[in-house]
Length: 407
Ligand code: TTP
Ligand code: MG
Image 1: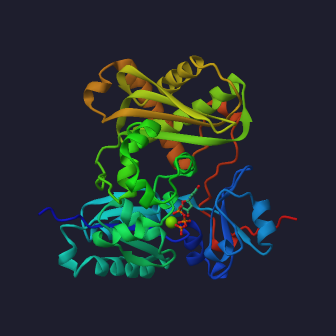
Image 2 (image 1 turned 45 degrees about the horizontal axis):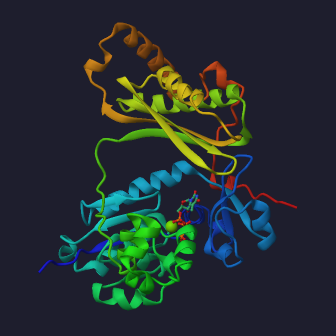
């Protein structure tokens, strides 16, 4: 008989806010919201104390202040969150090598083969909670189940500071009356389309005729029906050594339409991508440009080139040619540049002397930037558009938390 898998999902509670509260005792037990430093910032997350007032991710500071007048706004420290994320991975790896870091604060661990070494799945869950609390002073919620979908659901319904193991024999009863959008990946759109077919609960979804779902959702219909039954075949995707792509995107301080303005942001992003690729010794041969319109409609167009590159200007040139192949239909709020088809750089890639020379120049620029900060040397075209950097300076201290007062 095939034994079922045991998957553990770890999701930090109010991650950015918890990190801030753990770092600054003044914020403990208080309603706080973490925001970005840009002009058009929204709330990235809020503490559970603030959520009690109805504060939600995506709200503006004005909206949050209205709901919770004494809320404290904290400008997020992205470097600290990413650093915490990396250190969390080391904790998970103590229990299994099958770890998928799914997002900045969520991970899936396949503990099928290792749980007996640690006294069972719940023991592992409790141990992970204890170590994280001890090391970072923050809470997380752990869900355990026979697949990623159920493990994630177990975590979602046990927040905050919870631990729940949904065993295979419990899945059917639990899903029977559960609204479909409680399932990971079923958003508002699918929910509404299912509702128009008379399907509201997971139980109904699991029993819906396959043909009906196929007709309305195509191949996804098959997955949806299985999800309604709590079946999900995607395994934990263990991180690959090599990155598949290197990309950066940015939401612009204001919507833009002019080609020259767009081009200077593309140059800035190409430089960020090129620099990162060069720093880690990667080069790629597919360049992609992502555009998000004011309406949030988003698309990506890519172009394969015949050689591997990590040259800023090469990336810029091709990203720009993609831009020129598009007829823009509205102003733009986000731009992204990505280099994929990435390989570790080899001698072969750098045979041509001219390219070598260019690389030396770029290396010199990178060195200056590494030593004196991101803005020490920048390409002239984007100085015009540069905002103040969104990174927090190394001199930042928890006492420097910005308590923005909005009247
Ligand atoms: P989530 O896990 O979605 O939220 P959370 O950890 O803050 O709260 P919960 O207890 O409900 O899990 O996201 C993790 C972090 O990612 C969050 O702390 C902030 C960041 N984030 C954004 O920057 N933008 C977003 O739109 C979302 C949803 C999250
Ligand atoms: Mg979380």
